Image 1 (cartoon, chains in turn brown, blue):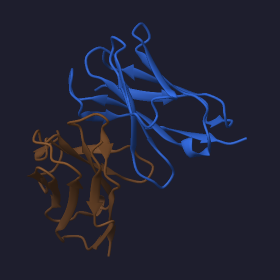
Image 2 (cartoon, rainbow over the protein chains, first blue to last red; image 1 turned 90 degrees about the vertical axis):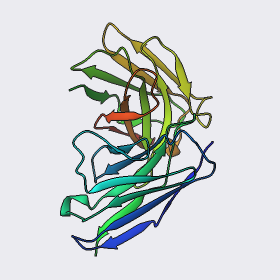
Image 3 (spheres, rainbow over the protein chains, first blue to last red; image 1 turned 90 degrees about the horizontal axis):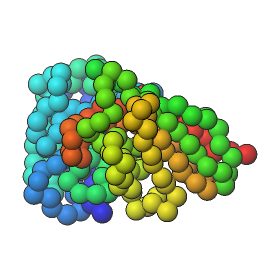
Image 4 (cartoon, chains in turn purple, blue; image 1 turned 45 degrees about the horizontal axis):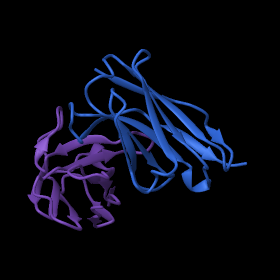
Length: 108
Length: 119
């Protein structure tokens, strides 16, 4: 199974700052079938990015994804108050589907 | 807009069977896979498996010996059964729909239902 490691575990930033979240895979997958989800307390995850860099419908352009092979990044260009949440990466190129452990973006 | 609603008992005794149903509304159950994903309180997400409208299944090997899923197209429902539960199975269980037929991308999630395993 592909293990996804997210870093950092917690990111403390202020509104307006740039957030850079990392997701590293235990093995390379050339298909770039990597997604990012946002989850707020008491809510279901929401799809932000798929195929490593494509924004899902309705997602603001301050969210961007990049990377390939084993290293992927989610960037939030300027944090809005509603962006403080937990973010998970997930690979869907191979079964079993696996998630990273999450990065919490908190207000500094 | 397709909506997913999980339902089932919120409390299950240890060693018993956890049974949940996901009802799909606003669209047909045919087409994309439907997955079950769970999240223990305060922890991360774990994929349990998916089922197609034709009944084809794909389970996470970590749970495969205890999991079964089924589909009822007449009711637009899929079901999850997890046998021999322990406290470690306490979690919010989400039903989720994939992006398109044959895709492994999980696109849309239900609100989830908390299941507690306790005597």
